[in-house]
Length: 518
Image 1: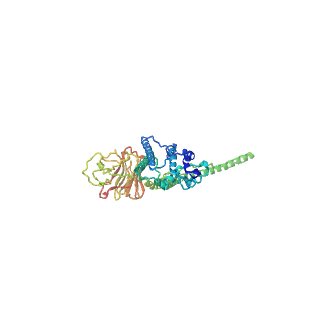
Image 2: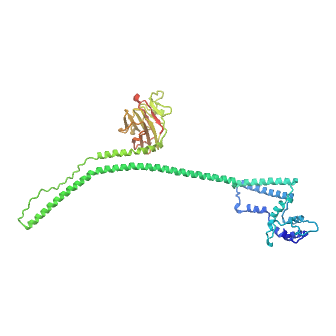
Image 3: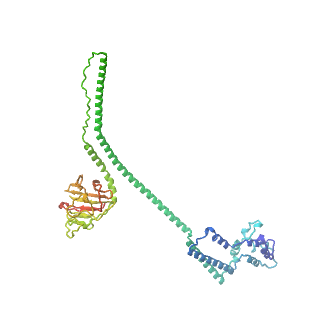
């Protein structure tokens, strides 16, 4: 202000400010509130989506509240005596403040007066860029001056100030609700930190899952590789046995072929010598008509072409025995696989013979008298047998039965529709695929006719595995990890159920059959 008023007296300040010096600057001034509205609400990149009725209502209420707050702020400024820096009010305000007594000193003599230029304008040197920053002036000289602190002790000022604060708070709250409705995030420092922590936690969880997946993949691959090597070794040994047996079966033929070749070569050489002798005799006769030809030995040209070989049964039998021993090594692989298909088998009391006693949990069966039950079509009426409650119409199943200290038992599966009354003939044609232990040391597979099974040890626990689609029923000695017998190419053609018989023979066979967990 000092450079604008230099050389003028106090009485000349009013006209100079109003006519020449302040007017151009004031015409370019725009309130801060309008600029803020233009940058925020008028930006094409920040236009909120107001397609929903709720959003439209919130925005309308927010605009009305902000306008009301602005109007109340204007009224409060007037009440408190704040200067309204508009074109119409600027000159009177300055004139009032500069109404000085006579004699009027020059402005230069009052360097510390009200019109002293603020510190921020002292660096301006170009007259073309001299301008008054009214916002800065207001902050530094009106609001910041201790002599111009607004008086809010009046009732009207206090009331307007409180109403303005409440209205601005309400507008701020409505803006927050509108931002939530429009989906604008509240990017406070605490919220950002929580979001970062949550996102990092999600990253950590996924990284842990990646480690688990890789670990599971390695473990599975190691199991597959180990099983692949074991199976490959077995079949490599089987192929070696086959090659050896083949070589052994072909060796007599090879020997005989060489013998025949030697005999034929010997005969051919003898014949060639005799031919040469005869040709020589012909030449002598041509030269000497009285030449006497000596008699030749009898001609023998017969070759023994008989194939006096024995049968191949011995070689093939030995080969099959050795192959079977090698294939038994695959039992370990099978016994590692089949427990995956274990089922919880329980006995069906509605099918049990009256001479059998079942445990309450349906896991044990032994000989006894149960006269309280009635004979039905589902119940075995002659043989002491019982079926399981479980049924199989597809897939695979496996269960184990304790058979220790027993001199006889039956285990297997049967068709649901198989005959259960009268004398039973246990074989696949009648719907029974059963392995039998009898007379304490004998075992047989109930085929047609039955096949004797030779076991090195008496089983204590027998595992039964069924593959419905493959048509397979296999029995295993779980204790010795060995294969007992398998029915193959079974035609079930119906629902099948587990089959049990504890063999009520004598007091030595009183121990129960116990279905145990696989």
